Image 1 (cartoon, helix red, strand yellow):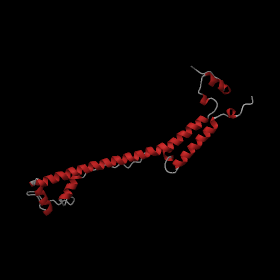
Image 2: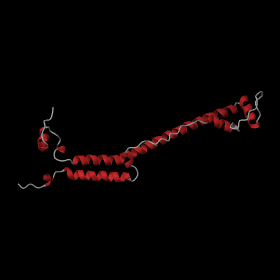
Image 3: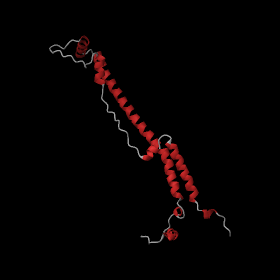
Image 4: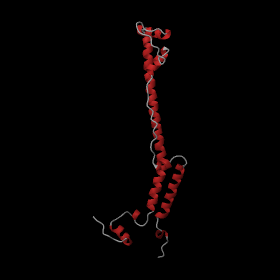
Length: 180
């Protein structure tokens, strides 16, 4: 169904003819109401969403720390089990490490970065590398406006725009008493 070309002065008949909502009929206060609601909701929801993202990152870091600790516990438990079983290879390596004795039949090479004690050796086995991302997430202008004290200004502006929308939403001719 195509609309006929009608001048804007006849827009009221166009609205009546095509059954447009009464909200849109005589005024544009609804535009202020909707935009004020959007600004007010954005000033409340966006900071909460940003806080949620920060908490998710912290949760991921805590889970990684927990998995690292679990790995360290497993490595130290294996070392303790080998000590309790009196593993001859482990005891021989510990003696060589403590007394700086080279293994029999091997040339002596001094490695300054090598572990000096058995606990250093176990800690080196338990160490795992972790990637740290330093990239800042990109923020939109609206999300930048909802941080800090700007959040209160944005909420206030939204409430003010809602107020303007409420004032302009009712036509004045409906408010005047009839003279019948």
